[in-house]
Image 1 (tube, rainbow, N blue to C red):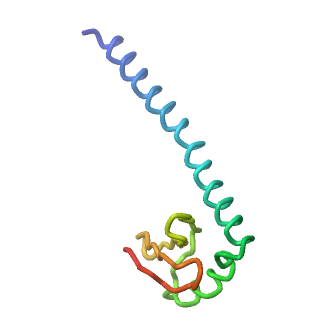
Image 2 (cartoon, rainbow, N blue to C red):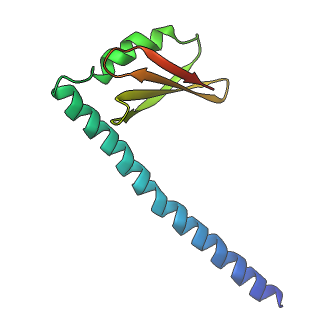
Length: 107
């Protein structure tokens, strides 16, 4: 195979990989919006605590230097997952959305 052909194939493979990764971003963004909409509906119905209340209770309990990244909401479990970074590693704190009780810390 000629060098030109190899470069063309490599460029094509790179372009396909880039296109696939770009297509995945909107799907992830949609998931995040769905989490927030679901949490908002549950909160307005009085079934769960607002995320701001959860954050006020949980963030101060984390170690000094932990950086809060954001949250996800699982409507099936009625739980928030707060995400932190500590020394370059992700930490997930699962919290009961009704009581603000920490269910699990994953590192």
